[in-house]
Image 1 (cartoon, one colour):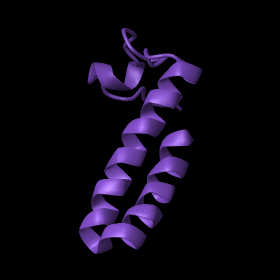
Image 2: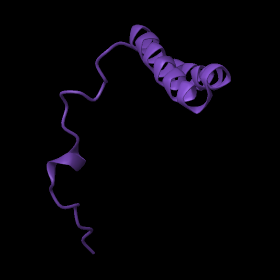
Image 3: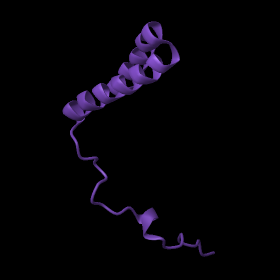
Length: 66
């Protein structure tokens, strides 16, 4: 969430200061700062890491039998 907010704010500030190029630089800087904050709040390991979901095993879906 912080990534979205800070990237948008960074783009607005960067555009006001440096035009379109400043907007790109500001958005990148804001996204990096927001990502660091999100990692501190939510942790660095995604909850799905290390687990295999049934969909990713490449097995066909079960068939319904009449």
